[in-house]
Length: 116
Image 1 (cartoon, helix red, strand yellow):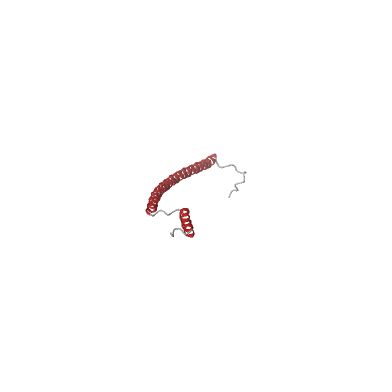
Image 2 (image 1 turned 90 degrees about the horizontal axis):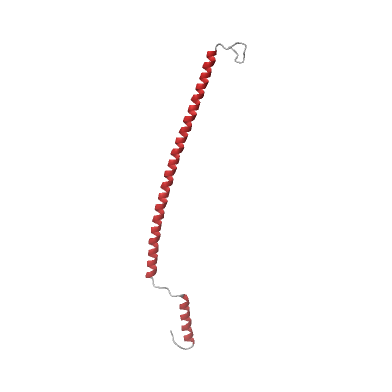
């Protein structure tokens, strides 16, 4: 077998060198084409992921708006029920007024007036 580093013998023919060069160039073109195909596939995958992310975001925003609307309606209903219940209850007297009346009655009793 011939040593590839041995330069003592000339190459058998320029045709075989040309063929080897053509094979190398062809392999390089195939590799570049494969890289380009991979790049295009990555772009398609990325665009599909972006579309899916947009769809998820839009769905989440619609859901949030729906929940917000329902919550507002529920809060308004509860507020109306609380107002209705508060209006149905007799008004609580002012503690200051109650104290004033009690002191007046006490003073009247102590003075020998009304027994109230």
